[in-house]
Every structure is written in structure tokens, then in C-alpha cells.
Length: 437
Image 1 (spheres, rainbow, N blue to C red):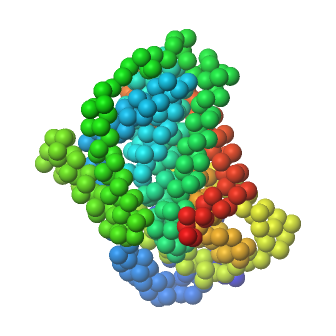
Image 2 (image 1 turned 90 degrees about the horizontal axis):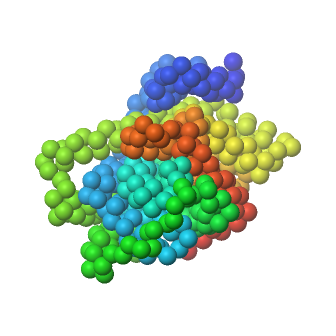
Image 3 (image 1 turned 120 degrees about the vertical axis):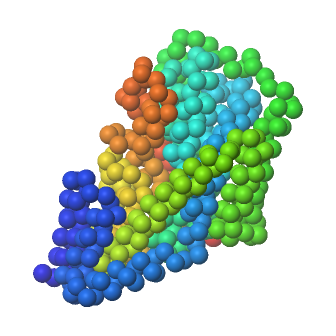
């Protein structure tokens, strides 16, 4: 067999292993080892496996993963998410469907602190959905808003998916973070317009026959300031230090985690037992992510050795598809895979194959990364996998709320994300303007 045939067989074998339920990382390691052994021999495969384990994980950059994960968990337990929602609820209370818009922007700010979509979905399903239903919104709409806006956590920096992409594409993490700001704000704006249009033209979908009474409730100036201070402090510490050039991404993660710890302790939200559980959970999440990155690095090297990416680039870019045809096909595959597997796994499987083609096509890797993250995040809202949807269902623990209702509520936001994806393709500068000052 030629190298290209072995690379193709490895991809087919990986898909088959995932289909029968094997963990993604384990499957990648197995097919990568077998692929290198078939192309060269078992000795080379063993040496490459050892080199990958050393090279892929020894980077100082990877310290950013546990730090941002820990910061997200501390922020979640300290109640900062509820405070963020309360502040935006007060600010937007007189706007039509203002609670929905408040949820979107509160999620955007929360994303700038945590960087994890699932954390946003879990927090705001408990905070925003009860408030919205109390003020006359339908459960379908309320849960759909939370599911839709939770995806901002993987686009607005700091973002775990941006870190994973930067590692795989050998791009700067700081540059990827900068690239996510304007697209994230654009997506939040498109979500807000979607909510306003639904409230205007489909009021039955938004309101459960009752009036929005949020405008009647006011918070005192002192309470608003008290709720705002922790949010502002964390955003300034993390994003101010990062974009002001005072901190690199790892240092920003450390400062943010320390700030979140101080807030949690000051609010008496953290005991020794709960702190230990957070540390254990942080370790579990970090090890899972780093193991997947190691497996993906081995997979990428095996594919490069096989020559398959270069052959694909020749076929796809010189054929009738062309560069933009390849881009559309890639994004469609990402969205379809999002229906069945999780976000990080999609990137780890597809990017080693796609990135050489992207470079041959002359696309900007930062812009392509933003498009990939948006497309991957659509999968969080689409059946049957829809991880954000199932997170909300689990967090709500409401027997009267079906998963189908949440998917229906999220559907307008899927359309909004597809529209945003089209705008980013048409206007690449939205993603690259801040990344290349």
C-alpha cells in the first residue's frame, strides 16, 4: 500500500473506532501507531510515540489550560454569573424582550471570564431561565436563549477551543484570542437582533401570554455597583493584562484564577472540601484535554508522513471545488460532525487533515480558526448530540421540560450563527483586524 492509501485507511479506521464507542484519544493513538508502523516499521512508530508524548506536552503554554479551567470553576461557584445577569437585566429592563438580550450580553461577559461554553449553559440555565419564565417568557424561548448565547464562551476570549486550535495550527494563542473579540461581539449582536425580531413578529414564541414585567423591578445603585465590581475586576485583570501587553496568556490565566479564588473566599462560597473537589475536577478536565492534544499531534504526524494532506490539497484545490468550495465543504462537515461528537474531538480529527490544504489555498490561519470555532459551536445546539442543550436539561431538572423544546428554542440561534458564519467568510477583516495590529 502507498502512503496515501495507508493515511486514508487510518482515517476510515478512526471513524469506525469512534462509531463503535472507543474514546477519541485512544482511537487516534492506535491508528497513528498502526499507520506509522505500516509506512515505516514498529521501531519508528515507538520512537515517534515517545517523541510526541515529550514534544506535545512540555510547552510552557499548556499551563494556561488548567489555570483557565480553574478560574471558570471558581467563577461559577462564587455566583459571579448571577451578578452579571442581574446587572444586565437592570440595564436592559425597558427594552422589548430585554431579559433575553440581557442573557446574551451577560453570557458574553461571563465568556470573557470563563472561556467554557458548558459552564455558561449550566450557570445561566439556573439563573436566567427561572427569571425569564417568571416574567412571562416561554420555557422554549428562555432555554433556547441560554443555549444559543452559551456558545459565546468558546469564541470570546479566553477560549479553550481557541487554545486547542492555536496549538494544532502552531499559531499564537494571544493572536487567536484577539481574533475572537469582534466575531464574538458580532455574534452577540446578531443574537440580540434575532431576539428583538422574534419578540416583534413571533410574540407567541417568546411570551407565554403574559407581559414582560421585568421593567417594573429595580435594583438600587449600591447593589448594582456591588454586583459589578467583581465582574469588572476579573475582566480588567485577565483581558486588560493580556491585551495591554503586561501578561502572556499563561500569566493572565494565573492572575485570573487568583482573582476568582479571592472573590470566592470573600463571598464565603468556598470551603476546603469544595476547593479540593474543584482542584480534582480541574485536573480531570486538563488531563483529558492534554491527552487528546497528544493523540492529535501523533495523528497529525502520521498523516504528514503518509502524504495524504498534500495529495488532498492537490486534488481539492486544482479540481472544480477550488479554495472556497473546499472551505464550504469543510464547514459543512464540521457542522454535521457537531451533531454526533464533541467540539474538541471534531477539531482534533479534522484539523490535521485540513490545515495543510488551508495553507496551500493561501487562507489566513487565524481567520480560518475563527470560522472553525463558530462552525464547531453550532454543533453544541444541533441534535442529536447538542451538548449545551443536554447540559441545560440536566441543570434544570424539570420533568415538564423536554429536550425537543430546548432544541426548538435554540433553532433561531443556529440560523443566526450560520448567518454570522457567512458574514465572516465575506468580510475576513472582522476576524483579523485586531489580530494583526
